[in-house]
Length: 146
Image (cartoon, rainbow, N blue to C red):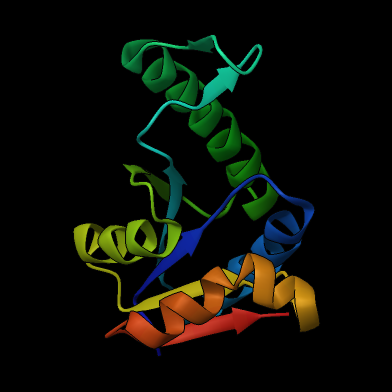
């Protein structure tokens, strides 16, 4: 059915649980898997008080993001199992859903497979749903795993 699955990962328990289903789907279809991690391109600003700010450099932020992405990919690949040979793609974008969609283009995936945090009510309104944003803006089918 699908030949290339793009799977956003973030290291969360929900993401790890979804990877078991992704492995089954990939095996059943003989599909390739690309894991994508999206990190914020801008370093955070940490304020020590109201008048002085302390931030990290862009270079240090990039190194930290790369190291974290590498760790997420290592754990996600292990969760997929030894039979799945997943490619990895680290995208730097301040908007998570845009980063996922960019990853889908770069990897030439034919479906995006993502887990949902199932945010509803006020939490959903305040935090929003990245899954919903991807569904709304994607030109590819989006398979949401619960």
